Length: 281
Image (cartoon, rainbow, N blue to C red; front, side):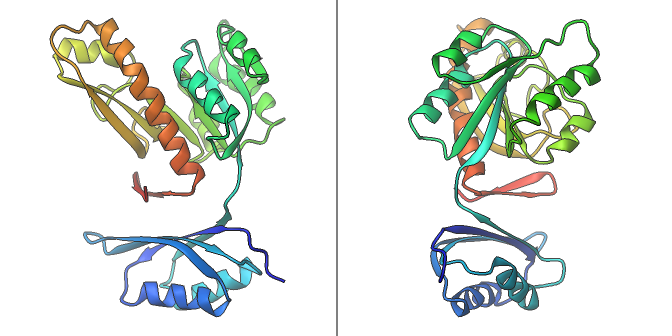
């Protein structure tokens, strides 16, 4: 008897004629029902991406093996059931991104199970208490970065999160920490990257006299604020805005971009290829 759970199939490989036909023929031969399909070809690199939602799964391994027989060598194939992922949120002192995600979670807008919040400050504990969300304060003052991260990892081991979401968590992780969650740490940066990386981007933007400010949600890598970009948005400003006023205006952009990026990731709509993303919105 077939399990009617919806699955998301990701395929990326060298482009060839007839790929879509070959893939969909295999799914049809297994009696699967395609409910959504999107594809893209990077013409410059002759590289193919396809995201397919289907129902009626019985034997993913067999389906994957059959797909490998008709796809180019070194094709990347993954199949993931649609469903709630586990997430741990991390934040420092600012409440807007964290509060927005907790509110969305409470009312079922996130296809995720938010398990806990981790912070290097106590400021946001009352906010988490209001949502009955476990809050872990792991202070960073007075200890080295590796020791602090070891304490974080001890807490995370209790939750085994699929993703970490940095909802204005104002610390930089070491490469060894990032390695524990490859392509599974999502950060919100308060500028339209690649402009104004690092600290105080609104002050950098003010000094530059920009006419738009923005926010960027990206995957965390070893290179500061240079990971693959998932989502971005901007907001117009003018000469009358101070740096603080830019920061205040930018909060809505930040929280909306982070929520959009998390939704895209949770719905398996993001391909990471080299240091770019292919996003099927």
